Image: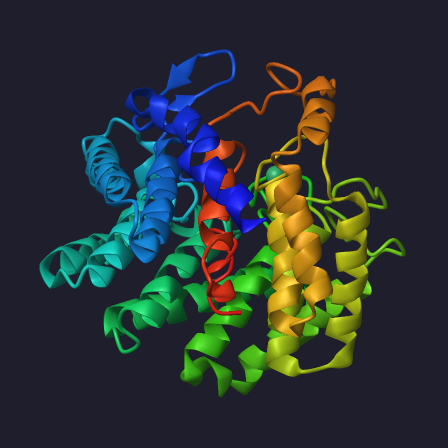
Length: 420
Ligand SMILES: [Zn+2]
């Protein structure tokens, strides 16, 4: 199995990706070959930086493909600097306005800081960290109280960046810790206002929409915000001793578990009874990492029971015809199954995750995906952004690079899982 994945990295999938480097390292590329400037990690050129970063980490471990490592390292360095430059020169305005890992320059600075830290290049690490921490003022001045709370576009996504830095680079970075506290205060203030209760939070998205829509899922909703908060309290001891914060988080986690549908899935928004989506963005895929974090934090059986119900549904329905993407595809569901394995050590979940990874290069399954007539897409059967991190083969390469490593803790859902 591992050999099969290795071949996909060293030959077919990687080659398809790398051949497009000149275009995708600067743009968002659509399936109809249209292009625009979009430096986001989610579907733009920032995701290319992240993909090379993860492949480079894997190649650094195997040591035998020196030429390839050199090539990938150059690509990474070049695309990182180019993307940051484009945003700072105002060629991708979205990147400065947004706070989040997935949709702003904060994601690029975070990747840069982690990389230079691993390289023991103190000077460059500090340069990236400074930029990441300064970014707080850029979006705060620009968006102020209009900043979203969710992960994909909002401040929970910036909190993710800070937690990466605090957990992997500098646990005592006061500037980062100060921002963590401010963001958590905002999340609680907004969230309790929307729930109209002091006891738990809700997440409204978009926040200025007239209709009150409270999303539940990983990318846009409560589950995603709680997943980041749960990791925050486990990374920063001060937070765990804050009784009020812990109580609100716990009540909110219980609220989510009570929303679980009979099938094991979770509704995409509050009050919605549809039970269709098994994705990271909406549904049990995004919920599984959250339930792992909730169990690790509160050690209550109900989170484990809920996790297994979600996991069985992902195993049953998770080979999505939408293809191999992370956000709404087979790779994302492979990550979710893997998170259950890391918690339980039960080989059943590892095997299920590997079967899903294998499905990303199984010709019969791939044919079914290619034939799937999804009218919501530019070209049915092809992801809208076919090389991107969250929809395209960038994400597949990241998953392969992590699954090939001996340390199973290397398999972590991008932008979502830090410690568990
Ligand atoms: Zn999605």
